Length: 358
Image (cartoon, rainbow, N blue to C red):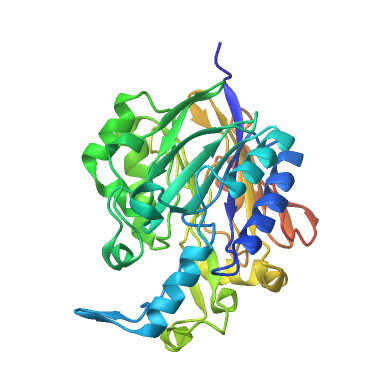
């Protein structure tokens, strides 16, 4: 019999770019943190290992490519991973030690044709430490095609677990109807969408997939700033005109009817997230948010009710009592539904820092 409930952790973070050891260290620490608070499925963002190089041109323009760009691409290739390889063995052991299903966005060195092609991939690990499957992004988006080759339909992977069938697509390939249909046809229950898209419209995409496929949708994105870019990159000058915050996040979990809004939303969140994690940003800390998914609905969701003077809106919903607990960086409130509308009672004040379950 399938389990009717699973705790899912979404990790929102970014490593030091072009430094796979940095990524591996964060993968280890955040997986252990999530597992220690009950998570059974842990999801990391797109190209987390060794990072999504937003804003870099790699010295390319139509018809030419300069030496500096080639140097940075070679550095990126050096920090990509083989599947299978030393890093997948390490990640498998991490999943086994913590008894979790682990889903990681990676940059994969293809073994075909001499290994000269990189792929934007998802790798799935089981709690026994085995690689259960992988998916290569079918069509890299725009200038991503400068970095990554195209996948194919042979890796439209869906994996059976005790709590349902999991699988997913990466970022903008979720706009490919037949790719989504291929996963729906395999009976997917939890649709995982690692992404680099922090726009508000991405939230609509997630809700549409949940409604269309009648599946839960789990999306993990980075919170990334210029501080994560090594200054010795040959093309570091590409970042000169970029904003300090390169990706503001927007990770989300959406109920399978699509009616439950994301528990994490980009709306009004950029300032909050910058403030909330800025204290530990230099340590590449992340926001880690496990949520409980039950058969039929998700027990964490988003309140659209504005809360004055509070900027963080993560909360857990206890649907039977219609009481909800909101957690912010400094407040824990209880929300109660009344005839006059929602009311909020202050339960305590504290600095939450990086917490796994709110």
